[in-house]
Image (cartoon, rainbow, N blue to C red):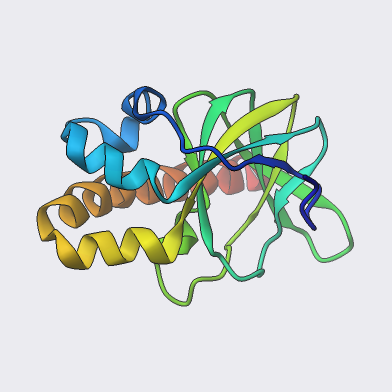
Length: 161
């Protein structure tokens, strides 16, 4: 099936084994992972294909299963600057869990890539039902956001140095 953003999605439940390989889910129980798998789906993207665009509503959190994804910012003149490239096991689209639920950057597949898309609202509902699960994932998410902010700051410094 083709989606509006051009990705091809698979409707079968994501195997728990795939989620175990994702850094953000490290230390979660088998039951936790089963709950997350139930609200996740696999998607594939061609090289150069946009996964999501800066400022769009963020409804999915994406985990790179295979391939590489560039995180990019618009420069205002239709150009984009890549601030980071992430690969297998990494997360993009954290905005699906943080208000105002709009993507703060764009994500583009650098090479053919397979991602796991997790429903942001479904994940938040799991957090409300199980604060321990929410704390673990949000703590890891805070680390990821902090690292991305640091990397972006270093790139800006290098532009002006």
